[in-house]
Length: 427
Ligand code: PMP
Image (cartoon, rainbow, N blue to C red):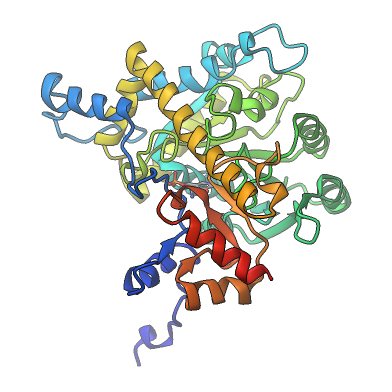
């Protein structure tokens, strides 16, 4: 008897599966508001001007794609230098003056003191998966995920060795508000009672929380990080939307700036999983990074050991990352002209998203849609599953099952239909 016969059908992917259904829908008025891909007012997935220019330079002038050999296991050296500089120096610079009392650029010190183990990864998902593998092998198999969260968080940690997956209270559907006090109480109650030596990891959405679109305030973050530090947890910062919160890439790195403040030691390391999928529009190119910041008290051999084990894990899965997208990102990060264009491109995208929020708030009676703590690509409608299904089956408007709506799928040609339908369905 074949063991293959015993394999059960896996459920379809909660998000990507819906696009298949959408593609088969014959209704000419159909609207896809499921996936987190930025589309312009014409419904097209856009290539930012900065990215197009970099592509042209790479292909025609610099000939960078002539050598299609393998990249090193942890990616290109230039990419590592430029991304670390962008994340830890620029995004953490004290001139942004956003961490109270910090006069020093602590991020730059981390680079200079060689405390960051860095790998180019297959976008944010790859960074999370490598983190999970690494943590499960050497440090911990316990993780806390917000309730709600991106559905793939659970999938990634579960499939990469984590046995102990918990959820912390993040959001109350009834009130549509964050529940930071409950979140911290959950942690204090359960983590402090666990007497086993294995530490607990925690996933933190750096900004533009997916799916609720609702982020903690800075004062909330201060409280949250203090608690996580007291409980000796391991922060895993998931930064998939840097720039999409405020329209300013640098400002949005608050959580990273906060966590690298030397008053927090993070004995078991600080993990940053970062993606250029959304903020550079490089979705399919799979460009991102994982960094593991070693604590200040660790001897140099610790970073060396971490580096070597990261290499070994990556080698066992995909050997080395792809080249093209990372060359594009690297060029944008290293050329001042392209970089300033990129900052503008991100700002334009965020203005359009805000414009859609404003239109929804005017056309519908949705007061929370342009709330100051609402950020990013998504709005969480709090429509119940039957309503989401009715929207899909009767009106061909597709949201994810949890009622999440991807804002940039709305444009001048469908906003009337979408708003009229929402009004109808709400009454
Ligand atoms: N984290 C969150 C919260 C996300 O929403 C996404 C993208 N949907 C990712 C990580 C990673 O995406 P990617 O692998 O495309 O960078």
